[in-house]
Length: 127
Image 1 (cartoon, rainbow, N blue to C red):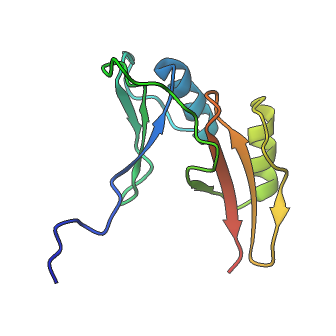
Image 2: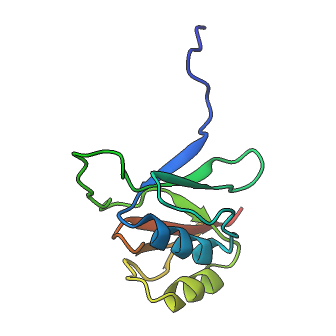
Image 3: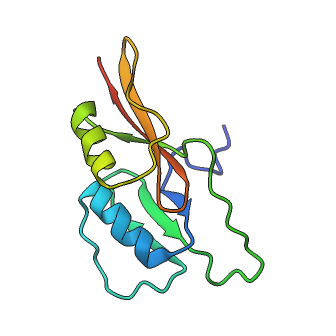
C-alpha cells in the first residue's frame, strides 16, 4: 500500500487572538512551564510529552486577511484521571463552562471555553 502520509498527528492547532494571553492561560490550565519569553507569533507550541502531539497556539499575525472564528464544538479532549479535580481546576480559572460533568457508564466528561471562546473538553475513561 502506498503511504504518502504518516498515520500520526504531530501537533494540534488552536487558533487564538492574543498569543501571549493564550500562552499564559494554557500554561496555567495544563501546569506546563512556558519555555521562552518573546511571544510575538505567529505560533507557540507546548510539548505535551514524548511521542504525543504538540499543542500549538496560532495567532495568525502574518496573515493579513485572516478572520478569527472560535470553534463552536470541542476541538479535542484533554485526558484526566480525576474528573472532579479537573472540573474544580478549570472552574477555578473563571472560564465559561459549556457543560457540567456528564457521566456515562465508561467515561465522564465536561466542556468549557478558552479565552477566545474555543470549546475544549476534558474526559476520563473507565476501563
